[in-house]
Amino acid sequence: MAFYPISISLPADGKSINSFALSNGYETITFPVQNQLFFSPSLSSISAPGSTGLVTVNITAATAGASTEHGDVLSARLDIPEPQQGTLAPKMASQSLRLEPFGKVGAFTLYSSSVALNESLISQTSVDVSGIVNGKEVVDEFNRLNMISGAPAAFSHGILIG
Image 1 (cartoon, one colour):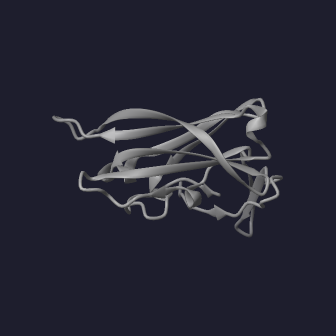
Image 2 (cartoon, rainbow, N blue to C red):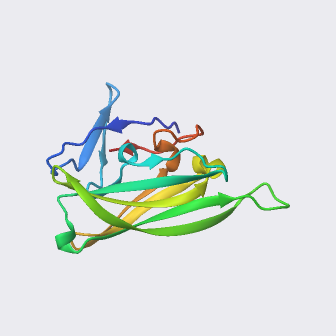
């Protein structure tokens, strides 16, 4: 099995897409896309490290066609590998953040929160965004913080949409 990263621009009208198709000339495969909530690496940021080695990570997510008037409640969960003595495998720590609305772009409502993290852990930390959007539970998972511009280089994975 091979993995090929892709990037797709979404229209700003909020209608978005619900699937996309890839073709190799012989067959076409259609992939569904969850388009109600997504992590936005292009609107997220990572500050320069301070003297303590900590960076501030601003996590931004967007909802299509939703607004705070619907009572949307969004959160981000960071899964952070922490070194542990006596083993090569890290232990995983989780940290949850409430994402607060801060603006709109077209029909998309933007939500954000910030957290301080050790710079050395950024490339291995994942972020899942989830919440109740327009009355239903939605999750965008398996995103890596190294998808954010300015993040330390490391192994990247996942389909980047946004």
